[in-house]
Length: 407
Ligand code: SF4
Ligand code: SF4
Image 1 (cartoon, helix red, strand yellow):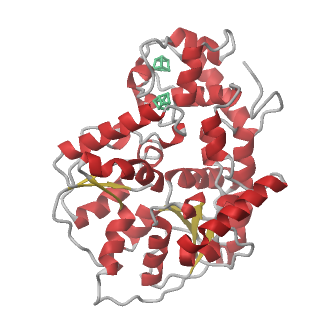
Image 2: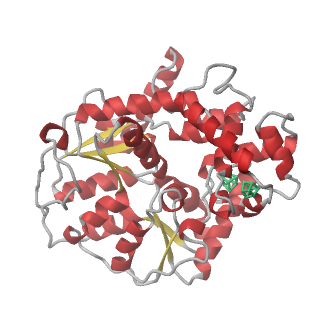
Image 3: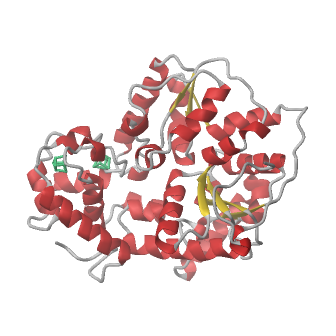
């Protein structure tokens, strides 16, 4: 098997060592049944499993068909539950990504400014981006790439998503202010979680960024770290699995659900449907948290392909094949429309960015879970926030589930 990662021959990092071991074992167990590729939204009929497996272990060079497939794969994991012997095709393709060169320009363009370190040119470009974004970010601007974090029970980790034009980060902080939470914020390109790099096959850079993030989080000694992106959440889950449970990673849905009794509920007249984030629902089986909230806000209708069988927004293809991802997104929106729901709710800022531009044309409103709660809070004139603080578990050594704010 090829043994290099990240731009050329070299030693494997710990992610690469684990991935290589996993892929070797899975390839040895593969029965060549093709089921994984049948379930895959990007694999075409010209892709043969025997060739793919042979190219994965380096027995044959990857053909153009295989190269295209590898770069178009958005690591949704839909192939995994399809495998009758429990193998992970997504990991095999990720391994190929990490060994395939040259990397597409679309990948490089997407990842260029994500993450700290690098040369003077990168840092200057990041500073310019921060400066340009400042007027649009308003209050959020103070948190972008700030050097010092104060200790707080809750750390909202937005990373690169702090720049998202969806405004989700600002709305989450408005909800935290409403509750009177004791929180700190970590955001900006220099605190990228590294998961987009992992999904693109850049294993070395990914591990470097995750290590950096772990150090930054420790500076705030939070009890919980709340994210607005499915990938950031997955990166945090890996960090605590590898480095120990110094904090609890939390999705926005879990954080809202725990505090739901303190938010006003504004019923949505039309039925709602829910688009699962692959990394939360399929890979971590945590899609129920969002659904429990949605059932409070309205009548929830499931799409035919939902939960572990959901359809990916395709964000992490990085638009190597823009026509393909637009087609898939339109199909997903059509599925939402066919349920009779007026609104498709998502729980990851990347899904929102992927679907929102096509929503009007599809005749479906696309919103984040955060939007529903924020709308209710914004219109509320009765409820007053109750400031509550609890002590950091790192200084106090407390364990166990986090109680609701004020509980
Ligand atoms: S992860 Fe998704 S896109 Fe990639 S091979 Fe599996 S099903 Fe296809
Ligand atoms: S579904 Fe599983 S066993 Fe069948 S070809 Fe794919 S990886 Fe191999």
